[in-house]
Length: 478
Length: 56
Figure: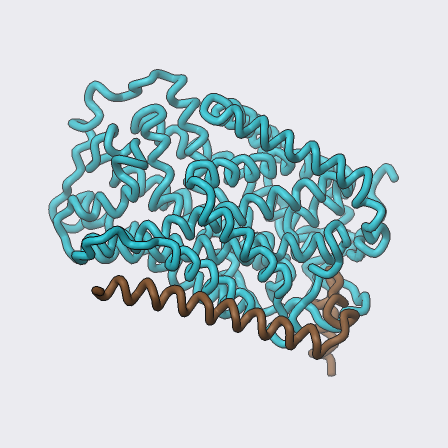
């Protein structure tokens, strides 16, 4: 019998500690799904195809599936831990409770950097999409993309400021449309409905693995792009009505959706676009699903995939603002950052100071940094976060075995998913090192410097006792 | 000036409106409530509050 039942209707792992104004519990599993899939789905619309450039179409498929295994492990591990740590901050809060303050500080920064950079990358992409539409509709001068980039960030920040329910309901609608657009494109071009236009055999002949197996390894870097951000579902933990049920359900439904979307995306794009064009995401196919729709000859598909691309971009930026602000807010609340950031809006019940504070940071990156660098720093921060997860779950199971805390979800075959995840992270670090070694070293150097700052200065301000409020039993061995 | 030039101006204007709305509301909120209330949130608190509310 578990000592603490966090699936209980009356507890959910929570206890009173004097909150006068807090985040609002209004979300359901569909919102959790929309948050996770919404952040990621833009990776199906653009970005994943750089994997084709690294190693050919088959390499991109192998990377898609191995990255799929990596993220399935992430989703399972996250689902178990977060169903017991039902609090804003996601992996930051997990690290705080399970490993310790220095790990938590680092994980919190990984999250904020990964999501803020991704938000900036999405805004840049949205600006680019507006310029493409302007050109297609006969605008002769080069469109000034800056007002559209700024509008995307300001509008979505405003939406997030005004309340989480409207924010994630908006994400649910546009993410569902973007996902359905991929399904409709697959049905229309593969021969299921009408005549198919797939030419896999002809396009692959003689180009099966153009750079051999090292190309497959290099493709792993961009294989992450199919799923990067699904772990963001955990940031909704303090705002879902039933964390122990909704978080695992939404997260696991999300990874299943993405495995389907990723495989269908690879299938339709690689069967229509030549690999040299598909693999060049700068001068060739910037938005492969949209390009596939254009080659289908159907105006309806062009419009559908055009809106799908824009919606996926907006959903991703929207989810990123939600997640980065929750992580920043949670760190402020525990005084890992100035406590001023731990404020909640008394009317809208959102972490409004964290939301507004991150707006100029996103704008600086969106207007002043190149897209590929922004994306690379986002991927690297995400990858550092994934490397923490296997250590986290191993320690969690060791300190609080299954019989001591009842989970909302228990992931199967422990510790195989943790070991698999750690191995795949190692492989991906090597793949990233092959292409972006300098950035990898610079990023790790940055985290070492901020860790020293935290250890020798900032830690004295942390709420050492007050930060642990969940009624967990004493960890085994302490 | 074609439609897209007008849309550029529209995007600048809307961005300013959203930004100003957030800033004004932020200032109003900070001046209307004490810092103790605004930063009183603690992890894990809300579920208990919700249950308390249901029990009434």
